[in-house]
Amino acid sequence: MRSDYAIAYGNLGAAFYHKRQFEQATTALKKAIELKSDHSEDYNKLGAIYAETGRNEEAARWLERAIELKPDFPEKHVNLGAVYIRLGRSKEAAALERAAQLEPNRLETRLDLGYAYAKQKRYRAASAEMQQAVRLNPNDEQA
Image (cartoon, rainbow, N blue to C red; front, top):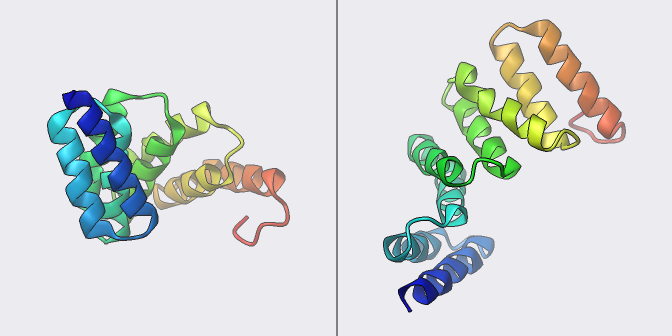
């Protein structure tokens, strides 16, 4: 029964998240985690909320936990890598490398990884990622 309530709170949190009602989403997602602490998507959503509201240190903690629970989900690695970049922790943006391995044709991952490499002064690797982004979607403004 407790698990059913956790799922319901998680779904409620996701609905609030998609409506950009972050305070309500945060409350619901934390309640879901309190009831059932092993659902990685609840942690990922909390990390995304904190990232979108500029609370990047908190975002990193929630996203790191999401990855611990389910390491083979590319979106979580992308989210964490982007947070690390915003925190100036480009060396830790290796989370993006894992995302690129899991989902090699994702434009956002390639762009973020190229940016992280540039911040590390790994220009050859940065250039390769940006070229890959252009190959993936030559008509995209970001590429």
